[in-house]
Image (cartoon, rainbow, N blue to C red):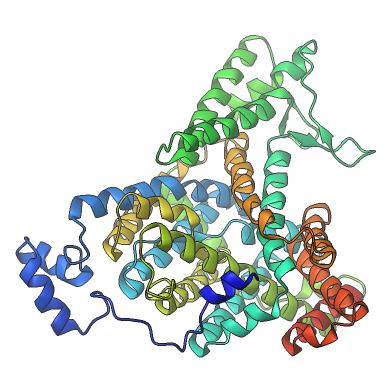
Length: 527
């Protein structure tokens, strides 16, 4: 962590200045009633959230709430697309969609009523990929339900760290090179997954991955073909994804609200137009696309969620039979895996949340005189509680979304903005059949674009310092090429310890860093 960042992050034990929304209820109400132009119910809501007192208006807060929703609603489709690979059941997409929506609603309502801030929460990008592709599909033997236990543990740890003020100590234990490399590695990892989902990079058997062929002389390749696994290959999905992510960049450049959502929807339209052309040209792959379209009852998703997702953390999560079924796994390795995985999830969650809170609040002038977001502790508590709630609902870590800054930029200043966003997510819960029509080539555009956004942290690494450079490089390159976020963090911390040991700076290694490094080393050796 840079010196500048260290100065910004202060322990939670420090007294934060009161704002109108945090002041004693009677005093706050008296002030708000004098300035609010509304009477009756609207006046009470104004008083509660301090809308007028903050210098905002109902119209501004509503527009800001809808703007935030438009900017982050893509997570419903993207997260459902990921978790449908591991949930199981007859309608895994529907189950994952509802779980994601409930996590978003719970987290955003906490922001509205506990923190009273204009921010929103949902299942975090990066953590969802970590759970699906590293923990479940990565050959660990862990099940979807097992990972919900890890997520719940992550939330509990985050809750304890926030309530006790130990979060600051954890921050200081992670080397600067690793901290700066984590978002870069996660971004590249997510972008890589998006490129795989869209068929932009494919496995050619010899070099592990290669760029998709755009040979227009091959008619089948030009439109689409059905792969051995039953997915659609060829130019169609790859072309749609590449054009889609460029469209998102253009829209973002022009400051269009909800650029990611419009990019996804536009890509879906182009996908079906090109598929229609391919169908007319006789492509079996394109024919399969349209034959696979079906509209289900929206309540089927709720039924699937109730059967295959909600509560699994309790009635299946503690069954580690699949894990113990792999040779070499035992109770000791499970304990190490639990500790390191929960730690990784918590670290990703904390870094993502802190960075987002600082960025979003700075954009809306919601910082105190020390440069710390107002009601910081309440926002962190909201995040921790939402993660626990999301685990019970059946989704990955719920965290504050960086896209929520779009609502702040639109003028949102109070928790009423978050309330509007939560209401939009509630309505979206009943649109899962429509969302399911969005092809993976279209949702892949969001994954790739998130990778673009997260690359900015690479400039924070002191590349002229060979010690920090190798630590940062090993962290994010291991995440991407090793297909594991936690392994990247572990390798980075171990590399940091070795560099300090061999350069005579062992005193710079904190006890907490030693402990974390030993845990990761044990993970590599025994699992």
